[in-house]
Length: 351
Image: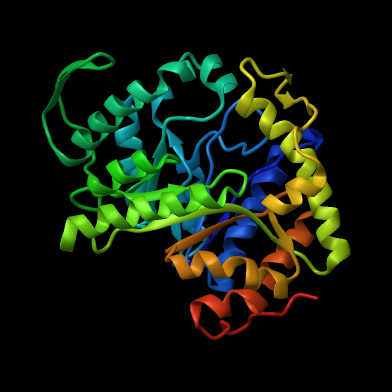
């Protein structure tokens, strides 16, 4: 099992400033490469102060300029809010500027507030995503593409320049439902998923759907991968774990506001914290916020069931220095139990 660090830009205090916010993300990416992570994953959200990255492709290009090895995964680019004729060219450019390290993760969007404000209601997102994905694939893989559909209708055109990676850049589809995972795996895509609030039954069905589809595909499915995203923070000790759990509880008051309420309650881009339906103890059971020894035990089921890559979402509003220290702890005390690799030279053990 390999690991990805999620550049989850949480922005609870706008006075911190966008320059510092994005500089922190770049520092985390550089740290991830030094520590032996396989990839970094980059969110996309607009108009709100959680997961705030308006252009994941721009961030991928920036990270590519200061790293050499990391896969750069968009997690995820939201297709329904874009014109695929423009986006396909941007993807080709990013593929070139990252020297082929881009992994284009795409999805249909999750927050009704931003989708509605951007003129693409979330109620229509499934249908629009399906057509957008087909258009994007055609534009990336063919020349003189014409289209006649519900959302796109255009005469033959060719995006320029053509992508560096042929026949197209690597692509990953975000899906939560086992049915969606199965269908997209059969189409030849890697999968990114999450069991939401730690639902073990859903997690097993998600992985099972991917594995079954791969098996039925034979050799064509052999190289397909599944990534799983979770809130995972490698705490120093029990007191540190409690502090990060309390931060997570405040985070989820905002996250569930924009994910579950439509319209959400947002004030000048800042999501209002609303009462959370779970107790803090119930949330603790659903997240993985603990010291290294406990974390090894809690991650073992993901390794055993065959997750290819685990995405660690660990930005809960803590200071950057604590974030980097937690990455160090995870890489030195947890990661070797699952990768079987020795620590990279120059790694310093976190205190």
